[in-house]
Amino acid sequence: MNSIFYQSPIDKLRIRANQTGICSIEFMNQPGSANHSPNQSSNPQLKSAIRELDLYFAGKLSTFKTPTAATGTPFQESVWSELQKLLAGSTIHYGAIAERIGNPKASRAVGLANNRNPLPILVPCHRVVGKSGSLIGYAGELWRKEWLLKHEGALI
Image 1 (cartoon, rainbow, N blue to C red):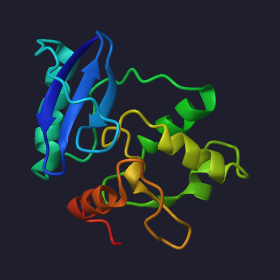
Image 2 (cartoon, rainbow, N blue to C red):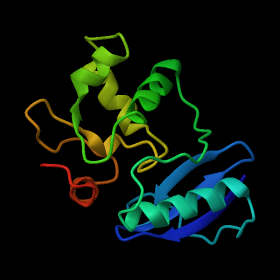
Image 3 (cartoon, one colour):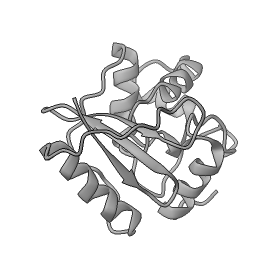
């Protein structure tokens, strides 16, 4: 596993990858984050993620193409896959994601899958809002969710 730090406008991120894709992104300035220096890497997945994050934060990228290698339960992975289809600047509620994955009564489970998303920003769980459009439930803290949505031009 290789890792690298990336300074974004909303926090310092630690990005971890293996040879097949990005495994995790961690906000470093939140409780529980380990703040030690990772190995700087020539891993092609990390280089791709850094390039795309630079473009995203410059407002020039809305869809990430860097391969991901996060693992979860089959249900979590189905939620994360659906999240990757969401366009920048759009929002959707938990129940709609549940319907899209063929499990319309699983809106709470969708929320839990979002909470376990190891790839914030790349897998855009920040685009999922409450049914009324309210900003609820973001493991990376609500102020980051609001910042990301405003950055993407979402109407919130």
